[in-house]
Amino acid sequence: MAAVPASLAGSFKGSFAYYTIKDRLPQILTKVIDTLHRHKNEFFEEHGEKGIEAEKNTISLLSKLRNELQTDKPLVPLDDKLPDTLLWNQYLEYQQNLLDGNGQPSWFQSPWLYVECYMYRRIHEALAQNPPIDDYDVFKEVKVQSFFESHQAIIALCTYLRELLKNIEDLDEKQLQEDFLKLLQVSLWGNKCDLSISAGEDNSQKANPLKSLDDLKPFILVDDMESIWSLLINCKKRRTSEDITRIDIVLDNAGYELITDLVLADFLLSSKLATEVHFHGKCIPWYVSDTTKHDFNWTIKQLQSANNRWMSKCGMNWEGSIKKGVWVYHDHMFWTLPHEFCSMALVATDLYAELEKSNLIIFKGDLNYRKLTGDRKWEFTVPFHQALNKFHPAPLCSLRTLKSDVQVGLKHGQGEQFVTTEPDWMISGKYGVVQFDASL
Ligand code: F6P
Ligand code: MG
Image 1: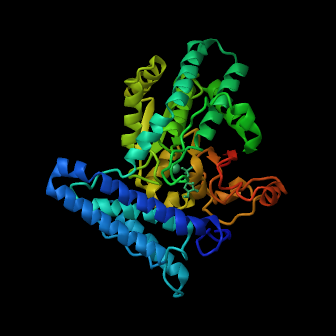
Image 2 (image 1 turned 90 degrees about the vertical axis):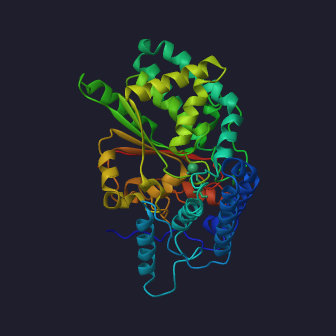
Image 3 (image 1 turned 30 degrees about the horizontal axis):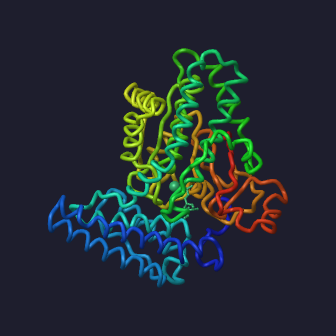
């Protein structure tokens, strides 16, 4: 394997990784503990004394976890017996071997990507070990809240989509392209709304997202949208009646961002740019707001039963697409492992083979970008293809707002210029990329 740069880590004092591990992660843990505490009565009503006991035990495990993190203790193997436990423990051994006898993997010394994923998996372990509250989603409340806080923006999007679909058959190629590019950007900027960066605080979309697209255009640092369009329109033109065009969307956050992805997916099918859309979500609660199967189904149900007619029309249509099998939801434990995507072919052969069937994979969000590029200290100008480090199951693109300090594929001087003028350009979510890689 060609040499790759070092992983981002909390050992680089003053870096965003350092700040995240030191401040943001303990803050998230504190909120999780508080959430459990506040739901004590609910656990009692549902499960009696057993529920209260489970809540207490979970809180005590989580407080211990917070203490381990804050005092940079060695990472310990997982103690549960879930399908991915062995893979996590093997990963810990692998990290141990990398150190070659020089210390032990720990919160600040090990790669940031690993330890941050590990924290969410330990939260899951704490609950998994405490039935009857073992399938309680500690982030459900904030996900639901963020959905409702984006209500007006969701109405605006659904209305726009339904109006557009009325005449979709009559649109010429240029109009179709214009609308595709619009909805792709809506989905890109939807990624500003994640609850991990805001540690669970309100971060929803308030304004009409379609109105701000022109103003946001200068903030797209890498714009490969035309290449994505060419790929899709060529698929459509070449397709015979038996062919399928499959698009995969590796989802990120529930709430407003998920709506932007579903709207894009609906447009792709209705415009016949695609014949199937496959969604990939998380098996366990993850990075606060990431989409699980429950969130996915809940969202579609919410839309169906909404008072607004365009929202409910969208919800009904989407339910129909699932029933027809042209929308397919998948989850795979690989998405909640700590591995970089370049290990997927080895670690999750079945998932890699599934993605190879795609004509285009859209990776949403910051964490997916970190995993695509290995969360390493790449030079800004390194080509995206190189940073993917042989991960090429199919043509792929990333729609991501910058919320962590890894970025590749920039022009010479572009990154350096920001470093001096806007020190937080990589973590504020103000900038975005639509980055494409076609080569296999
Ligand atoms: O906390 C670290 C982090 O990976 C950030 O980089 C980002 O704020 C967030 O978590 C996840 O963002 P996203 O939801 O876009 O993947
Ligand atoms: Mg997320």
